Image (cartoon, rainbow, N blue to C red; front, side):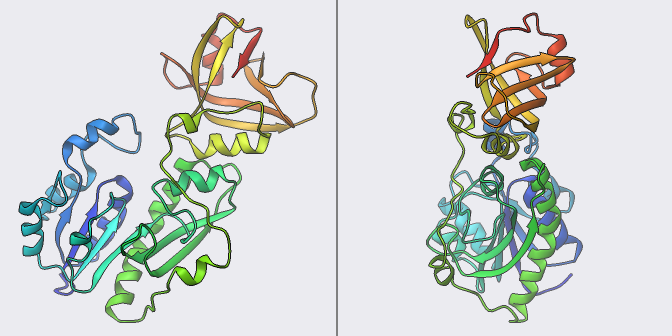
Length: 325
């Protein structure tokens, strides 16, 4: 086990777990872990990226690493125990906003891993928004924490391409696999003084910034009338599998249900159908949009399980005069 530096790791999700494992397996001196309280998982029970058991706590218990689960990050008892760990450096991966009292706690500083190429896509949902906005590339950035969110000096960046059909879940899995190596490379660069931090202010003046705010249920609703096939396609990919794009499916303009859409294909083709018409034939369902059709591969009708389109159609009593809105 390396004696230096004394590391406090801060994270609370499966994304965090990849970096934590990499540090531990490479025998870095993790003196303590800060993670979410157990009851915070109950509020995120519908998020498929979060199990009922806190993955960071589970790993800490299995490997006998001390950990804290503060409900209040400014609680005096928590801060006292944090200081006892006497951290040289703190590493943050996928966690809530930290008060200054915490990120100023270590001798060398606190660096964070962010799932975008900063300064682009500052915010809590960078993976979703890069796909929603049709970006062709993204990556990971490590940076020192500062007073402003996601605005500290950049340490390292790793860039990857976004595939044309890639969903947010698939992109997240790719970034997870990259995360451990960039965290270790950043840590070694800081220890050996081989990294020269770059101010984000020098970069932000050269192009307009795009942000990655929290996505609400309202944001997930598909607007069929006013948007192009490409915009709709990117939105569905960018919200799959969570928090998931949705629409209202109307039967004869009398009954409607919420319809979640996970996987689609785009069919670029001129047509004269009204926008939002649902066409079902040979166990295929496609929705007419500007510039073509969105073909549903996987979805979920309200009150039922997530299914492939063949099973969804099998369970539908009405298959004509359907519209989405």
